[in-house]
Every structure is written in C-alpha cells, then in structure tokens.
Length: 187
Image 1 (cartoon, helix red, strand yellow):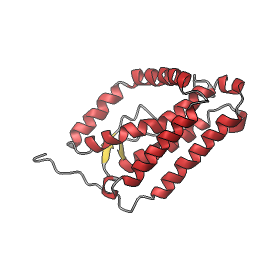
Image 2 (cartoon, rainbow, N blue to C red):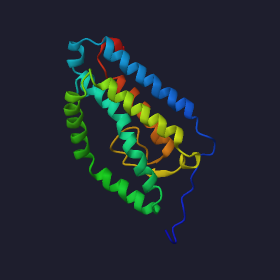
Image 3 (cartoon, rainbow, N blue to C red):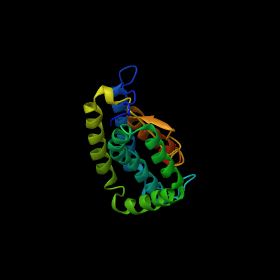
C-alpha cells in the first residue's frame, strides 16, 4: 500500500518449531489416550466449569487446533493492513463477544455429535498433521507478523499476537480445558 509502511516482521530469535511441534504431539497423544480409556458414562458427564459434557469439551479442545488453521491466513492478511484497520477489526470482533460465545458453545455441542469419541481422534490427527506441515513451511520472517486480537473471545488471546503466538495458542487452549475435564483419567 502506498504511504503505509510495512509493520516490522520477523522474530528477534529463530522460532523453536520443534518445541511447538512436540507440544502438538503431546496433545495428540493425550487426546488419543483419554479417548481410549474414558468410559462412555464419563464422556457423557458434565465437565467442571463449563456447560459441556466431557465429550463435547474434548471436541472443543480439538476445535482450538482447527481454529488456528483458519486464523493463520487472517493474521497474514490483517498484518499487512494499516495498524488502525487491524485495531478496528479486533474492536468490532470484541463487541460481538456474546454471540461468539453462544456460537462457540452450540457449535461444539453439535459438532461433538458428528465428531464423537470414535471420530474425534481422526479429526485431531488430520488437523495436527496440516498444522505441523504449515508450521514447518512458514517462512521465518513471517513468524513475527502481528495482528490485533479480540481479547474478550478467549483468555489466551492477547491484544496483539504474532503468527508464532497463533501457532502456540492451541496448546494453551488445550491445557486450559483439559483441567476442566472430570474424567478419572484426566486427574
């Protein structure tokens, strides 16, 4: 864009992609283990601190990885806009936090009917394979691109996030919600 300087990009130090990928693999292994040992009655039980059942919450944990696959192109695009446009976009999204949370809740309830304990592992594998491939292909200079985020949508969204932060986000999301599972195996 004419007259709009490019925002500074590129992390100060190289991103430790192997650490991020290892975190993904730990989440993958943990999800598969939980799905393999959790009895049906525990999956249908309520989680702690959410309105979801354990099975719905497990889907929502996988959904965090799915979201990142869709967020990355948006971050790459918005990071190229003038800073006021990005802040305005995040501000508009922040005003929609109530409908977002309703859709987030209902969507996970509905999706868990299709991607139940028998299909959720496959979805997780497919998503993490794609996310890991994307992480390995991401040019180093792009990892520091920044985008303002709607902070009322998720406790792990910060006012400004880099591409690297977005790659790291779903592991934080997974760990946060894992603590809310009431599965015996999760304790």
